[in-house]
Each structure stands twice: as C-alpha cells, then as structure tokens.
Length: 327
Image (spheres, rainbow, N blue to C red):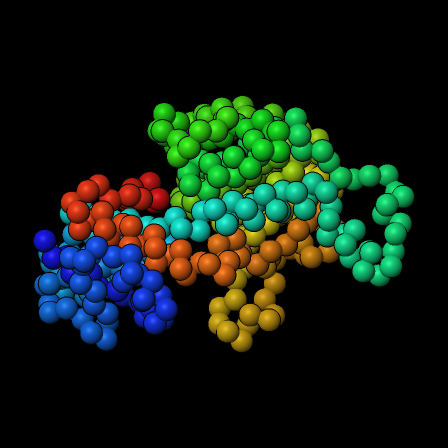
C-alpha cells in the first residue's frame, strides 16, 4: 500500500539521498515545493506544523517531529486532532548521553580551570589540595530514564557508579540490560540525599519546570555534582548559581540554559543566564550542543526512515508522544 509523506522541511541533497536509500519502496516523498494534492498526505514530518497544513490533509494519520522533544505550540495544536498520532526522533540520544558523561567527568575532575592555568604555563594546581573527585563507588541519580537517561546510566555503570533513577513509568521495559534502581518521580526528595551526582535528562513540562530549587539542592550530600543536559528551566537559575558560588555544590556541567540568542546577530553576544556563571571556576559551560556531531543529519534521516518504514509495513510506530504528559 502506497504511503504519501510530506516533508515539511527542506532536506539537503545528501540528506534526501540518505533518506531515500533507507526508505520502503512503497513510500512516496513530497516537499513543500512539490506537495501532494490536497487530502493526499498520510504522514507529515515537521516540528511546528501550521493549523492550515493539518486541515489541508484531513486523512493525515501521523506527525513526526524530526528531533527529540515536543514544542509547546505543536502539543497544543495536535490536541485538537486526537486521531493523528504524534512521534519524535531519538537519533541523537547516544551523543547527548556522551556529552553528559563528558560534562560529569570534566566537572568532577575540574578540567576547565586546570586546563586554563596550564595554558598560561601555571602548574600550581598540581601542587594545591585536590578538588577532583573519584566517581567509582559514588551514586548517580538520573532524573528521566528514557533514551538519553538509560544510555547515560550505562556509561555510569562502566565507571563503577551506582545508578538510581526516576521515571514516570518505572515498570516499563528498559532499552537494554543495565544496573539501575528505578523509582517514580514522587520519590525525588527521598533519593536526593543519596545522590553524589544529579544528572538531569527530563523533558521540560509544567510538572518539571523549576523541579530543582533551593530546597532540592540542599538535600544533596556535601560535594555533590550536577549535570543538566535537558532544559535549563528545570533547575531554578538563582538557586543553582548561589549553591555553586557558595560551595554547597562542588561543581556543575551545563549544556542547557535560560537565555538563548534570538537571531543570528545576537549569537556572539548573549549571556546564557541572568547570573554570572562565567565567573565561577566550578562550572563547565557548553552552548546546548549535546546532539551536535558530524554524523547527526545522516543519523536523523536513517531514524526517520525507520519510523516511516514501520508505518508502511503496518507495524507499531516507535517513539509515540503522550500529548497529555508532553513527551
């Protein structure tokens, strides 16, 4: 059975070739420049579809957001169309977990300040009392245990860390075997005192915004580490800054922030926070690049093909989004 798919983005020739190479032969691709006749699209691939676009194809069966996460505007729109299933892609989960591990290690070993010192021929950090921590034998608490969280857990297992995690559906099967103690989100306050490292991989929803505040940070043990590779507003901005500045947290690794450039011109001059994290030597700062690797677009096209092929074969399509939960 033929499946008509409208790509609501402009793939490069290389991306299009990769996608077509992996597609089921019964799938016909269309683009905004070469659209299908009204009412003929079965699936739409777009992150932020317009209301008119959905209305133009009343027989639409599914929407694929071509990245992880779900924009708020898309969530609200698709609530009007409960018969259309919504899915997203997790092609960048591995590299995001890798960056999370890199931030954890860099924060624990204070790599940034010692690197900066040695670039100035300054060896004094080697002879000062150590600030670096051993991770083996410590406990990592991972908030959010989906594609990224589980991959990060596997890395923590390899570092000989004990892993505990929170998950909205603790009973849901894991993606692969790993050692982890899984709890519902309501157990957060009970788990925080055990967490030598707090690793955040949650989606941002009305339930997770400001989830980690001053009270939650205070529950962590002395010399705890924090890594956020999810969304900045999950953590209270002021609470994190002061906990780091005053030494109540040993260090943090951050790939996500509260302020972002609004246009191309502002990319070279936008502070990521209202607070001067740049002045702290116990923060590793990264500009939201967890999924950015040279293989990213190829991986995206292969992952997209896998979802569309499942639809063409009449199989269950992976990565369905729960619009009520927001992910």
